[in-house]
Amino acid sequence: MVDTRNIKNIVFDLGGVILNIDPSLTTEAFAQLGYKDFPTVYTKFSQAKLFDHFELGKITPDEFRTHIKSGLDESITTKQIDEAWNKLILDFPDERINMIQKLKSRYRLFLLSNTNKIHYDFYTRSYRSKYVFNFSALFEKAYYSFAVNMRKPDETIFKLVIKENNLLPEETLFIDDTEINVKAAVELGMKGVWLKPGETINSIGIF
Image 1 (cartoon, rainbow, N blue to C red):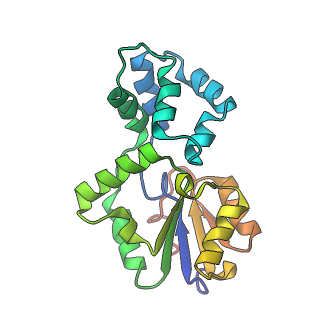
Image 2: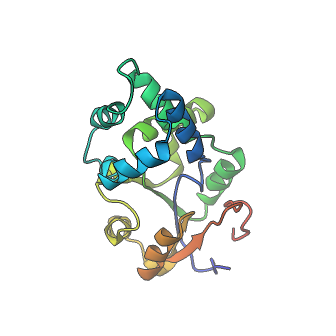
């Protein structure tokens, strides 16, 4: 268990930590649009670094949609592509949002997410619709890979968060559901919590 007695800052991942996601739903949605073997298609696009470039903000949403649409019937619309792509995004559980709001009185809070512009637009809109205020208001500052052109587990994005906010790594806790990202943070001197399947920020008992 991580000792949080000296922790003054918390950096949260988003998907799988604050936001519930299920990537299999996007696979199913694209299959219904005509990609019968989307995992194979995903691998092909991954090899071409399409998803990497989209998460890093190197291509626009429209360029991304054009690549995806290249393997679909011409009748498939942009709206259908976006709906399928966003299908993996589920909900923000109230207990997680409530915990983060309570933690704001005790810690400096930050967000560090590998994400893309289409997903960002969708979940921030969904959040505001449910909670009225903007998602970014939960944090002192939010870092999105597509906006800063870096992503985890590259050490440069962790160093950016640390430097811009004058954080001491040993006073900073990073929470993510991907082990390699947590290891990268720990190598830079941060404390790390890897949320394994079935664990949540509410259930791990460190706050």
